[in-house]
Image 1: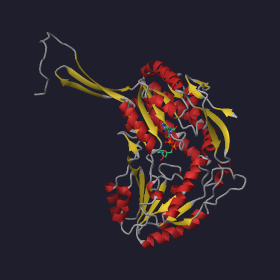
Image 2: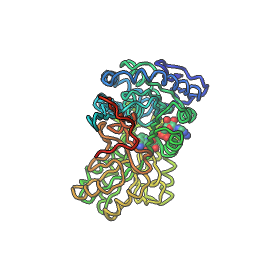
Image 3: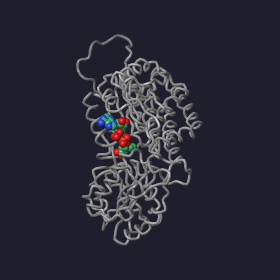
Length: 499
Ligand code: NAD
Protein backbone atom coordinates (compact mmCIF):
# COMPACT_ATOMS: atom_id res chain seq x y z
CA UNK A 1 0.00 0.00 0.00
CA UNK A 2 1.20 3.49 -0.79
CA UNK A 3 2.65 5.35 2.19
CA UNK A 4 2.33 9.09 1.84
CA UNK A 5 4.82 11.56 3.31
CA UNK A 6 5.13 15.05 4.67
CA UNK A 7 6.81 17.72 2.54
CA UNK A 8 9.43 19.31 4.75
CA UNK A 9 12.35 21.52 3.75
CA UNK A 10 11.81 20.71 0.09
CA UNK A 11 11.78 16.94 0.50
CA UNK A 12 9.22 14.21 0.83
CA UNK A 13 9.81 13.00 4.36
CA UNK A 14 8.41 9.86 5.99
CA UNK A 15 6.45 10.24 9.19
CA UNK A 16 8.22 9.22 12.38
CA UNK A 17 5.35 9.29 14.87
CA UNK A 18 4.26 5.77 14.03
CA UNK A 19 0.67 7.00 13.67
CA UNK A 20 -1.16 6.87 10.34
CA UNK A 21 -4.64 7.49 8.93
CA UNK A 22 -6.19 5.47 6.13
CA UNK A 23 -6.87 7.28 2.87
CA UNK A 24 -9.80 5.74 1.01
CA UNK A 25 -10.85 5.56 -2.58
CA UNK A 26 -14.44 6.59 -1.82
CA UNK A 27 -15.73 5.07 -5.05
CA UNK A 28 -14.59 1.56 -4.14
CA UNK A 29 -14.36 1.84 -0.38
CA UNK A 30 -10.80 0.51 -0.51
CA UNK A 31 -7.93 1.93 1.50
CA UNK A 32 -5.58 3.20 -1.19
CA UNK A 33 -2.87 4.80 0.94
CA UNK A 34 -1.97 5.74 4.45
CA UNK A 35 -0.92 9.16 5.53
CA UNK A 36 1.42 9.86 8.44
CA UNK A 37 0.03 11.84 11.36
CA UNK A 38 2.71 14.16 12.67
CA UNK A 39 3.72 14.32 16.31
CA UNK A 40 4.23 17.62 18.09
CA UNK A 41 7.99 17.15 17.66
CA UNK A 42 7.67 16.73 13.89
CA UNK A 43 5.49 19.82 13.63
CA UNK A 44 7.82 21.87 15.82
CA UNK A 45 10.79 20.81 13.69
CA UNK A 46 9.03 21.93 10.48
CA UNK A 47 8.11 25.26 12.07
CA UNK A 48 11.75 25.78 13.07
CA UNK A 49 12.80 25.17 9.46
CA UNK A 50 10.20 27.69 8.29
CA UNK A 51 11.45 30.25 10.80
CA UNK A 52 15.03 29.87 9.59
CA UNK A 53 14.09 30.10 5.89
CA UNK A 54 11.64 33.01 6.10
CA UNK A 55 13.84 36.12 6.50
CA UNK A 56 15.72 35.47 3.26
CA UNK A 57 12.42 34.99 1.42
CA UNK A 58 10.97 38.18 2.83
CA UNK A 59 14.10 39.98 1.65
CA UNK A 60 13.41 38.91 -1.96
CA UNK A 61 11.67 41.85 -3.58
CA UNK A 62 7.92 41.53 -4.16
CA UNK A 63 8.28 41.49 -7.94
CA UNK A 64 10.56 38.46 -7.81
CA UNK A 65 8.24 36.74 -5.35
CA UNK A 66 5.38 37.44 -7.77
CA UNK A 67 7.39 35.85 -10.59
CA UNK A 68 7.38 32.57 -8.66
CA UNK A 69 3.59 32.78 -8.71
CA UNK A 70 3.65 33.46 -12.48
CA UNK A 71 5.70 30.35 -13.06
CA UNK A 72 3.44 28.44 -10.66
CA UNK A 73 0.38 29.28 -12.78
CA UNK A 74 2.11 27.75 -15.82
CA UNK A 75 2.97 24.59 -13.88
CA UNK A 76 -0.54 24.22 -12.47
CA UNK A 77 -1.94 24.42 -15.98
CA UNK A 78 0.66 21.95 -17.22
CA UNK A 79 -0.28 19.42 -14.51
CA UNK A 80 -4.01 20.11 -14.44
CA UNK A 81 -5.01 16.60 -15.58
CA UNK A 82 -2.67 14.89 -13.13
CA UNK A 83 -3.87 17.03 -10.23
CA UNK A 84 -7.52 16.51 -11.10
CA UNK A 85 -7.10 12.74 -11.33
CA UNK A 86 -5.36 12.54 -7.94
CA UNK A 87 -8.01 14.78 -6.45
CA UNK A 88 -10.93 12.73 -7.79
CA UNK A 89 -9.32 9.48 -6.70
CA UNK A 90 -9.16 10.59 -3.07
CA UNK A 91 -12.17 12.88 -2.87
CA UNK A 92 -14.58 11.19 -5.25
CA UNK A 93 -15.73 14.30 -7.14
CA UNK A 94 -15.99 14.17 -10.93
CA UNK A 95 -13.02 15.16 -13.08
CA UNK A 96 -14.60 18.42 -14.36
CA UNK A 97 -15.42 19.33 -10.76
CA UNK A 98 -11.87 18.47 -9.66
CA UNK A 99 -10.50 20.70 -12.40
CA UNK A 100 -12.76 23.48 -11.12
CA UNK A 101 -11.27 22.93 -7.66
CA UNK A 102 -7.74 23.42 -9.04
CA UNK A 103 -8.82 26.29 -11.30
CA UNK A 104 -10.43 28.30 -8.49
CA UNK A 105 -7.19 28.02 -6.51
CA UNK A 106 -5.12 28.89 -9.55
CA UNK A 107 -7.12 32.09 -9.95
CA UNK A 108 -6.05 33.14 -6.47
CA UNK A 109 -2.44 32.50 -7.49
CA UNK A 110 -3.03 34.72 -10.54
CA UNK A 111 -4.38 37.45 -8.28
CA UNK A 112 -1.24 37.15 -6.14
CA UNK A 113 0.90 38.08 -9.12
CA UNK A 114 -0.28 41.61 -8.34
CA UNK A 115 1.55 41.52 -4.99
CA UNK A 116 3.91 44.42 -5.77
CA UNK A 117 0.89 46.67 -6.24
CA UNK A 118 -0.87 45.31 -3.16
CA UNK A 119 2.18 45.66 -0.92
CA UNK A 120 3.49 49.02 -2.00
CA UNK A 121 2.18 50.95 1.00
CA UNK A 122 1.28 54.61 1.56
CA UNK A 123 3.44 57.70 1.64
CA UNK A 124 2.73 61.21 2.82
CA UNK A 125 5.24 63.76 1.77
CA UNK A 126 5.65 66.64 4.23
CA UNK A 127 3.24 65.39 6.87
CA UNK A 128 4.73 68.17 8.97
CA UNK A 129 7.64 70.56 8.54
CA UNK A 130 10.41 68.37 7.16
CA UNK A 131 8.47 65.27 8.14
CA UNK A 132 7.52 62.37 5.88
CA UNK A 133 5.27 59.55 6.94
CA UNK A 134 5.02 56.16 5.31
CA UNK A 135 3.23 52.92 6.03
CA UNK A 136 4.47 49.58 4.84
CA UNK A 137 3.01 46.11 4.99
CA UNK A 138 5.48 43.58 6.31
CA UNK A 139 5.25 39.82 6.42
CA UNK A 140 4.20 38.18 9.67
CA UNK A 141 6.89 35.50 9.63
CA UNK A 142 5.54 31.95 9.82
CA UNK A 143 1.87 31.39 8.99
CA UNK A 144 -0.09 28.15 9.12
CA UNK A 145 -3.25 26.87 7.47
CA UNK A 146 -5.55 23.98 8.37
CA UNK A 147 -7.80 22.88 5.54
CA UNK A 148 -10.83 20.60 4.96
CA UNK A 149 -11.22 17.59 2.70
CA UNK A 150 -13.77 19.05 0.34
CA UNK A 151 -11.54 21.39 -1.68
CA UNK A 152 -8.07 19.83 -1.45
CA UNK A 153 -6.62 22.21 -4.08
CA UNK A 154 -8.57 25.47 -3.90
CA UNK A 155 -8.59 26.07 -0.16
CA UNK A 156 -4.86 25.43 0.45
CA UNK A 157 -4.15 27.84 -2.46
CA UNK A 158 -6.53 30.45 -0.98
CA UNK A 159 -4.17 30.51 1.98
CA UNK A 160 -0.62 29.73 0.92
CA UNK A 161 -0.51 31.81 -2.27
CA UNK A 162 -1.13 35.18 -0.56
CA UNK A 163 0.81 34.17 2.56
CA UNK A 164 3.90 33.28 0.55
CA UNK A 165 3.79 36.14 -1.92
CA UNK A 166 3.63 38.51 1.06
CA UNK A 167 6.96 37.08 2.24
CA UNK A 168 5.83 34.56 4.86
CA UNK A 169 6.80 30.93 5.25
CA UNK A 170 3.75 28.68 5.34
CA UNK A 171 2.92 25.42 7.10
CA UNK A 172 -0.03 23.60 5.57
CA UNK A 173 -1.86 21.04 7.67
CA UNK A 174 -4.23 19.74 5.04
CA UNK A 175 -7.02 17.23 5.49
CA UNK A 176 -5.80 13.74 6.30
CA UNK A 177 -8.71 12.45 4.20
CA UNK A 178 -7.47 13.93 0.89
CA UNK A 179 -3.75 14.55 1.38
CA UNK A 180 -2.12 13.84 -2.01
CA UNK A 181 -2.98 16.99 -3.94
CA UNK A 182 -1.66 19.40 -1.28
CA UNK A 183 1.66 17.50 -1.38
CA UNK A 184 1.72 17.82 -5.17
CA UNK A 185 0.92 21.54 -4.94
CA UNK A 186 3.85 22.12 -2.60
CA UNK A 187 6.22 20.23 -4.85
CA UNK A 188 5.13 22.32 -7.83
CA UNK A 189 5.75 25.54 -5.92
CA UNK A 190 9.34 24.56 -5.43
CA UNK A 191 9.62 23.71 -9.10
CA UNK A 192 8.38 27.26 -9.71
CA UNK A 193 11.41 28.57 -7.83
CA UNK A 194 10.28 28.85 -4.21
CA UNK A 195 13.19 28.32 -1.80
CA UNK A 196 13.15 25.27 0.45
CA UNK A 197 11.30 25.57 3.74
CA UNK A 198 8.88 28.30 2.61
CA UNK A 199 6.04 25.90 1.87
CA UNK A 200 5.84 22.77 3.98
CA UNK A 201 3.02 20.29 4.24
CA UNK A 202 2.79 18.51 7.57
CA UNK A 203 0.03 15.93 7.67
CA UNK A 204 -1.76 15.16 10.86
CA UNK A 205 -4.75 15.39 13.13
CA UNK A 206 -5.53 17.23 16.37
CA UNK A 207 -2.01 16.67 17.70
CA UNK A 208 -0.48 18.47 14.72
CA UNK A 209 -3.09 21.24 14.91
CA UNK A 210 -2.43 21.78 18.60
CA UNK A 211 1.30 21.86 17.94
CA UNK A 212 0.62 24.77 15.55
CA UNK A 213 -1.67 26.55 17.98
CA UNK A 214 0.75 26.37 20.88
CA UNK A 215 3.93 27.18 18.94
CA UNK A 216 5.05 30.76 19.59
CA UNK A 217 6.77 31.06 16.21
CA UNK A 218 3.49 30.75 14.32
CA UNK A 219 2.04 34.22 13.89
CA UNK A 220 -1.19 33.49 12.08
CA UNK A 221 -3.53 30.55 11.62
CA UNK A 222 -6.11 30.12 8.89
CA UNK A 223 -8.73 27.42 9.16
CA UNK A 224 -11.55 26.15 6.97
CA UNK A 225 -13.71 23.25 8.12
CA UNK A 226 -16.62 22.48 10.41
CA UNK A 227 -17.94 25.04 12.91
CA UNK A 228 -17.07 23.24 16.18
CA UNK A 229 -13.42 22.92 15.11
CA UNK A 230 -13.44 26.49 13.77
CA UNK A 231 -14.60 27.71 17.17
CA UNK A 232 -11.94 25.65 18.94
CA UNK A 233 -9.13 26.87 16.70
CA UNK A 234 -10.28 30.47 16.84
CA UNK A 235 -10.54 30.48 20.63
CA UNK A 236 -7.27 28.67 21.22
CA UNK A 237 -5.32 30.56 18.54
CA UNK A 238 -6.50 33.96 19.81
CA UNK A 239 -5.70 33.03 23.40
CA UNK A 240 -2.16 32.27 22.21
CA UNK A 241 -1.87 35.75 20.73
CA UNK A 242 -2.09 34.69 17.10
CA UNK A 243 -3.98 36.30 14.27
CA UNK A 244 -6.69 33.80 13.36
CA UNK A 245 -9.35 33.50 10.67
CA UNK A 246 -11.67 30.49 10.77
CA UNK A 247 -14.37 29.50 8.32
CA UNK A 248 -17.03 27.06 9.44
CA UNK A 249 -20.11 25.19 8.30
CA UNK A 250 -23.10 26.34 6.30
CA UNK A 251 -26.78 25.89 5.56
CA UNK A 252 -27.44 27.80 2.39
CA UNK A 253 -30.97 28.73 1.41
CA UNK A 254 -32.43 29.49 -1.99
CA UNK A 255 -35.58 31.58 -1.96
CA UNK A 256 -37.78 31.05 -4.98
CA UNK A 257 -40.26 33.86 -5.56
CA UNK A 258 -43.58 33.29 -7.34
CA UNK A 259 -42.36 35.36 -10.32
CA UNK A 260 -39.16 33.29 -10.80
CA UNK A 261 -38.51 31.21 -13.88
CA UNK A 262 -39.16 27.87 -12.20
CA UNK A 263 -37.32 25.79 -14.78
CA UNK A 264 -34.24 27.89 -14.25
CA UNK A 265 -34.64 27.70 -10.48
CA UNK A 266 -35.10 23.91 -10.58
CA UNK A 267 -32.02 23.45 -12.76
CA UNK A 268 -30.02 25.67 -10.45
CA UNK A 269 -31.16 23.72 -7.39
CA UNK A 270 -30.08 20.45 -8.94
CA UNK A 271 -26.54 21.64 -9.61
CA UNK A 272 -26.20 23.56 -6.36
CA UNK A 273 -27.85 20.93 -4.18
CA UNK A 274 -26.40 17.71 -5.55
CA UNK A 275 -23.14 18.74 -7.25
CA UNK A 276 -20.09 17.25 -5.51
CA UNK A 277 -22.60 15.07 -3.58
CA UNK A 278 -23.60 18.17 -1.60
CA UNK A 279 -20.13 18.34 -0.03
CA UNK A 280 -19.63 22.04 -0.69
CA UNK A 281 -19.82 24.78 1.88
CA UNK A 282 -21.69 26.80 -0.75
CA UNK A 283 -24.10 24.00 -1.70
CA UNK A 284 -27.76 24.92 -1.51
CA UNK A 285 -29.36 22.64 1.06
CA UNK A 286 -32.63 24.46 1.69
CA UNK A 287 -35.13 25.48 -0.98
CA UNK A 288 -37.65 28.07 0.20
CA UNK A 289 -40.45 28.45 -2.34
CA UNK A 290 -42.77 31.36 -1.60
CA UNK A 291 -46.46 30.52 -1.90
CA UNK A 292 -48.18 27.15 -2.23
CA UNK A 293 -48.40 27.26 -6.01
CA UNK A 294 -44.68 28.00 -6.36
CA UNK A 295 -43.85 25.16 -3.96
CA UNK A 296 -46.09 22.60 -5.67
CA UNK A 297 -44.78 23.47 -9.13
CA UNK A 298 -41.17 23.51 -7.96
CA UNK A 299 -41.42 20.06 -6.36
CA UNK A 300 -43.08 18.77 -9.53
CA UNK A 301 -40.16 20.08 -11.60
CA UNK A 302 -37.50 18.84 -9.20
CA UNK A 303 -38.63 15.21 -8.95
CA UNK A 304 -37.84 14.07 -12.53
CA UNK A 305 -34.61 16.03 -12.54
CA UNK A 306 -33.47 14.38 -9.31
CA UNK A 307 -34.56 10.93 -10.42
CA UNK A 308 -32.46 11.24 -13.55
CA UNK A 309 -29.27 12.25 -11.73
CA UNK A 310 -26.35 9.99 -12.57
CA UNK A 311 -24.36 8.94 -9.57
CA UNK A 312 -21.10 7.09 -10.10
CA UNK A 313 -17.32 6.94 -9.91
CA UNK A 314 -15.24 9.68 -11.54
CA UNK A 315 -13.75 7.04 -13.80
CA UNK A 316 -17.07 6.86 -15.68
CA UNK A 317 -16.18 10.15 -17.32
CA UNK A 318 -18.44 13.06 -18.09
CA UNK A 319 -21.54 10.92 -17.80
CA UNK A 320 -21.63 11.29 -14.02
CA UNK A 321 -23.29 14.14 -12.12
CA UNK A 322 -21.81 13.39 -8.74
CA UNK A 323 -19.69 10.81 -7.00
CA UNK A 324 -19.45 9.21 -3.56
CA UNK A 325 -19.13 11.04 -0.27
CA UNK A 326 -15.79 11.06 1.47
CA UNK A 327 -16.04 8.23 4.05
CA UNK A 328 -18.42 5.55 5.24
CA UNK A 329 -18.84 7.61 8.44
CA UNK A 330 -19.99 10.59 6.36
CA UNK A 331 -22.44 8.33 4.53
CA UNK A 332 -23.82 6.95 7.81
CA UNK A 333 -24.22 10.44 9.20
CA UNK A 334 -26.19 11.58 6.14
CA UNK A 335 -28.47 8.54 6.25
CA UNK A 336 -28.98 8.97 9.99
CA UNK A 337 -30.07 12.57 9.44
CA UNK A 338 -32.46 11.42 6.69
CA UNK A 339 -34.08 9.07 9.25
CA UNK A 340 -34.50 11.96 11.70
CA UNK A 341 -36.24 13.91 8.94
CA UNK A 342 -38.74 11.10 8.43
CA UNK A 343 -39.21 10.59 12.18
CA UNK A 344 -39.76 14.30 12.77
CA UNK A 345 -42.49 14.48 10.14
CA UNK A 346 -40.95 15.80 6.92
CA UNK A 347 -42.13 14.30 3.62
CA UNK A 348 -39.43 12.32 1.82
CA UNK A 349 -40.39 12.96 -1.79
CA UNK A 350 -37.34 11.37 -3.40
CA UNK A 351 -35.86 8.53 -1.39
CA UNK A 352 -32.22 7.70 -2.12
CA UNK A 353 -31.72 5.38 0.83
CA UNK A 354 -31.61 2.17 -1.16
CA UNK A 355 -29.19 3.46 -3.75
CA UNK A 356 -26.58 0.93 -4.79
CA UNK A 357 -24.21 0.86 -7.73
CA UNK A 358 -23.37 -2.42 -9.38
CA UNK A 359 -19.68 -3.16 -9.05
CA UNK A 360 -19.25 -0.42 -6.44
CA UNK A 361 -21.31 -1.82 -3.60
CA UNK A 362 -18.59 -0.99 -1.08
CA UNK A 363 -18.23 2.62 -2.31
CA UNK A 364 -19.56 5.52 -0.24
CA UNK A 365 -22.34 6.46 -2.64
CA UNK A 366 -25.48 8.15 -1.39
CA UNK A 367 -28.54 8.43 -3.61
CA UNK A 368 -30.20 11.83 -4.00
CA UNK A 369 -32.90 12.79 -1.50
CA UNK A 370 -35.57 15.47 -1.58
CA UNK A 371 -37.60 16.48 1.46
CA UNK A 372 -40.75 18.60 1.40
CA UNK A 373 -42.68 20.15 4.32
CA UNK A 374 -39.57 20.62 6.41
CA UNK A 375 -39.97 22.88 9.45
CA UNK A 376 -37.30 24.99 11.18
CA UNK A 377 -37.23 22.83 14.30
CA UNK A 378 -36.19 19.65 12.46
CA UNK A 379 -32.61 18.34 12.62
CA UNK A 380 -32.43 18.21 8.82
CA UNK A 381 -32.99 21.97 8.86
CA UNK A 382 -30.86 23.03 11.80
CA UNK A 383 -27.83 20.81 11.08
CA UNK A 384 -25.44 20.79 8.15
CA UNK A 385 -26.02 17.49 6.32
CA UNK A 386 -23.14 17.83 3.83
CA UNK A 387 -24.64 15.28 1.48
CA UNK A 388 -27.00 15.00 -1.50
CA UNK A 389 -30.10 15.92 0.48
CA UNK A 390 -32.19 18.92 -0.48
CA UNK A 391 -34.79 20.10 2.03
CA UNK A 392 -37.79 22.26 1.21
CA UNK A 393 -39.23 24.70 3.73
CA UNK A 394 -42.40 26.30 2.40
CA UNK A 395 -42.95 29.98 3.15
CA UNK A 396 -46.18 31.89 2.62
CA UNK A 397 -44.61 35.28 2.06
CA UNK A 398 -41.32 36.88 1.11
CA UNK A 399 -41.02 38.29 4.65
CA UNK A 400 -41.40 34.82 6.12
CA UNK A 401 -38.77 33.44 3.73
CA UNK A 402 -36.17 36.11 4.43
CA UNK A 403 -36.78 35.87 8.19
CA UNK A 404 -36.27 32.10 8.06
CA UNK A 405 -32.84 32.50 6.50
CA UNK A 406 -31.96 35.41 8.81
CA UNK A 407 -32.76 33.28 11.87
CA UNK A 408 -30.53 30.37 10.86
CA UNK A 409 -27.28 30.21 12.79
CA UNK A 410 -25.19 29.84 9.63
CA UNK A 411 -24.70 32.62 7.11
CA UNK A 412 -22.31 31.49 4.42
CA UNK A 413 -24.18 31.81 1.11
CA UNK A 414 -27.74 32.40 -0.06
CA UNK A 415 -29.61 32.88 -3.32
CA UNK A 416 -32.86 34.39 -4.45
CA UNK A 417 -34.63 33.60 -7.72
CA UNK A 418 -36.91 36.37 -8.90
CA UNK A 419 -37.60 38.56 -11.92
CA UNK A 420 -38.26 41.59 -9.75
CA UNK A 421 -35.38 44.04 -9.26
CA UNK A 422 -36.99 45.68 -6.27
CA UNK A 423 -37.29 42.37 -4.38
CA UNK A 424 -33.74 41.40 -5.29
CA UNK A 425 -32.38 44.72 -4.11
CA UNK A 426 -34.31 44.62 -0.87
CA UNK A 427 -33.06 41.10 -0.30
CA UNK A 428 -29.39 41.89 -0.98
CA UNK A 429 -29.53 44.85 1.40
CA UNK A 430 -31.27 43.16 4.31
CA UNK A 431 -30.01 39.61 4.40
CA UNK A 432 -27.44 38.77 7.10
CA UNK A 433 -25.41 36.35 4.97
CA UNK A 434 -21.93 36.96 3.55
CA UNK A 435 -22.33 35.84 -0.07
CA UNK A 436 -25.53 36.53 -1.97
CA UNK A 437 -26.66 35.25 -5.35
CA UNK A 438 -29.39 36.92 -7.38
CA UNK A 439 -30.51 34.31 -9.88
CA UNK A 440 -27.09 32.73 -9.24
CA UNK A 441 -27.22 29.57 -7.15
CA UNK A 442 -23.64 29.33 -5.84
CA UNK A 443 -22.37 32.88 -5.49
CA UNK A 444 -18.68 32.13 -4.90
CA UNK A 445 -16.80 35.41 -5.36
CA UNK A 446 -13.90 35.53 -7.78
CA UNK A 447 -10.30 35.72 -6.56
CA UNK A 448 -10.10 39.52 -6.62
CA UNK A 449 -13.16 39.86 -4.38
CA UNK A 450 -13.16 38.18 -0.98
CA UNK A 451 -14.79 34.98 0.20
CA UNK A 452 -16.48 34.75 3.57
CA UNK A 453 -19.73 34.11 5.36
CA UNK A 454 -21.36 35.69 8.40
CA UNK A 455 -22.69 34.40 11.70
CA UNK A 456 -21.48 30.91 12.73
CA UNK A 457 -19.91 30.37 9.32
CA UNK A 458 -16.97 32.57 10.19
CA UNK A 459 -14.80 33.53 13.15
CA UNK A 460 -12.49 36.50 12.65
CA UNK A 461 -12.54 39.75 10.72
CA UNK A 462 -10.91 39.25 7.37
CA UNK A 463 -12.13 37.17 4.48
CA UNK A 464 -10.24 34.73 2.27
CA UNK A 465 -8.37 35.95 -0.84
CA UNK A 466 -8.82 39.30 -2.54
CA UNK A 467 -7.51 42.42 -0.76
CA UNK A 468 -8.32 40.96 2.69
CA UNK A 469 -5.69 38.25 2.24
CA UNK A 470 -2.96 40.87 1.85
CA UNK A 471 -4.12 42.41 5.11
CA UNK A 472 -4.32 39.09 6.91
CA UNK A 473 -0.82 37.97 5.94
CA UNK A 474 0.95 41.25 6.65
CA UNK A 475 1.09 43.81 9.40
CA UNK A 476 1.34 47.53 9.02
CA UNK A 477 4.28 49.52 10.18
CA UNK A 478 4.13 53.31 9.96
CA UNK A 479 7.29 55.34 9.98
CA UNK A 480 7.44 59.04 10.74
CA UNK A 481 10.75 60.47 9.59
CA UNK A 482 12.35 63.83 10.00
CA UNK A 483 15.86 64.44 8.88
CA UNK A 484 17.37 67.29 10.87
CA UNK A 485 18.19 70.34 8.85
CA UNK A 486 20.06 73.19 10.41
CA UNK A 487 20.26 73.72 14.17
CA UNK A 488 18.27 71.43 16.49
CA UNK A 489 15.72 73.29 18.55
CA UNK A 490 15.73 70.93 21.50
CA UNK A 491 13.28 68.29 22.71
CA UNK A 492 9.50 68.46 22.32
CA UNK A 493 7.50 67.55 25.42
CA UNK A 494 3.91 67.79 24.26
CA UNK A 495 2.22 65.73 21.53
CA UNK A 496 2.66 67.50 18.18
CA UNK A 497 -0.63 68.65 16.59
CA UNK A 498 -1.35 70.36 13.31
CA UNK A 499 -2.25 74.03 13.86
P1 NAD B 1 -13.30 19.20 9.72
O1 NAD B 1 -13.63 20.33 10.64
O2 NAD B 1 -13.59 17.81 10.15
O3 NAD B 1 -11.72 19.22 9.39
C1 NAD B 1 -11.07 20.37 8.92
C2 NAD B 1 -9.62 20.33 9.37
O4 NAD B 1 -9.58 20.33 10.80
C3 NAD B 1 -8.86 19.09 8.91
O5 NAD B 1 -7.57 19.47 8.51
C4 NAD B 1 -8.82 18.22 10.16
O6 NAD B 1 -7.68 17.40 10.22
C5 NAD B 1 -8.81 19.23 11.27
N1 NAD B 1 -9.44 18.71 12.50
C6 NAD B 1 -10.44 17.79 12.58
N2 NAD B 1 -10.75 17.57 13.87
C7 NAD B 1 -9.95 18.36 14.60
C8 NAD B 1 -9.80 18.57 16.02
N3 NAD B 1 -10.57 17.94 16.90
N4 NAD B 1 -8.90 19.46 16.43
C9 NAD B 1 -8.13 20.12 15.55
N5 NAD B 1 -8.21 19.96 14.21
C10 NAD B 1 -9.11 19.08 13.74
O7 NAD B 1 -13.99 19.55 8.32
P2 NAD B 1 -14.09 18.64 7.02
O8 NAD B 1 -15.04 17.53 7.29
O9 NAD B 1 -12.75 18.33 6.51
O10 NAD B 1 -14.75 19.67 5.99
C11 NAD B 1 -16.14 19.87 5.89
C12 NAD B 1 -16.58 21.09 6.66
O11 NAD B 1 -15.88 22.22 6.20
C13 NAD B 1 -18.04 21.41 6.46
O12 NAD B 1 -18.59 21.81 7.70
C14 NAD B 1 -18.02 22.57 5.49
O13 NAD B 1 -19.14 23.43 5.55
C15 NAD B 1 -16.79 23.27 5.93
N6 NAD B 1 -16.27 24.14 4.89
C16 NAD B 1 -16.43 25.48 5.05
C17 NAD B 1 -15.98 26.35 4.08
C18 NAD B 1 -16.14 27.82 4.24
O14 NAD B 1 -15.52 28.56 3.50
N7 NAD B 1 -16.95 28.30 5.17
C19 NAD B 1 -15.35 25.83 2.94
C20 NAD B 1 -15.20 24.46 2.82
C21 NAD B 1 -15.66 23.62 3.81
